[in-house]
Amino acid sequence: MLQVRHRYKLWLIGMIVFAALFASARLSGSWPMLASWPALEALQRPVQWWQEFSLWFSEKQTLQADYLAFRKKAEQQASLIQEANSLREENRQLRSILDVAGITGYRWHAAKVRGRSPEAMSQRILLQVHGVSKDDVIVSSEGLVGVVDSTAEAHATVRTIFDASLAVPVTIPGSSLAALARGQGESLSIDFVPEEFLLSAGQVLYTSGAGGLFPPGIAVARINSVTTVPGELFVKVSADPVAHWQRDNWLAVASHLHQPPVMPSPAP
Image (cartoon, rainbow, N blue to C red; front, side):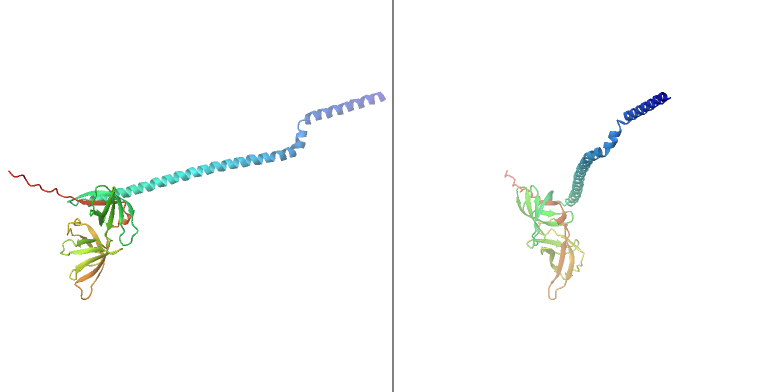
């Protein structure tokens, strides 16, 4: 009996050892990993942070590059739109100038505005133009601007009708009025208007053609006020230019067509 119990104990101990070895073999791969996982996670966390930061920085650089490319493209499109609008306005001005150029006896051509003088009493203009001479007439699509004062190397300086040294013979079409428009810096004074002429604000005066310098029929001034001066033969008339050349990029130049001198025929 004792021998049987002894064999039973040996068999039980063997089974326990076998079970322990089997369990150890099954858990030997995962248990150390589970036990060391917190340490491994702590070691890997800086690497994960660095990867996330690198990804964020890369995405930020990509977004910044996309933004700069979009901004550059938007600026280019805005520049193209502005250039197209400028060309459209210049084409409109040129077409309007062509309408003015119907006055005969003059050679008409377009001139590009390159600069404007800040002088309040003359407001001179610099034009880029070829083939013009002193005293050639400058006209916008709206009316008279002035005359060429000097020329040099494909450029011309224009003395505008604001200049007090320039007197323009004006009239009202269909009337016998013969007045002079003179510059006053920022406005015009209409001289030699007899009291019997009933002028009113808003009326437009045109070049009369007297003296032969200015072509007839060009709008010059719009009357602002008419004041009667006691004891004077002429009324005091203030006016503004009809033309607004300060915003025009193109103006028209009217050059006189000089007839060639007639050569005497040789004697027979």
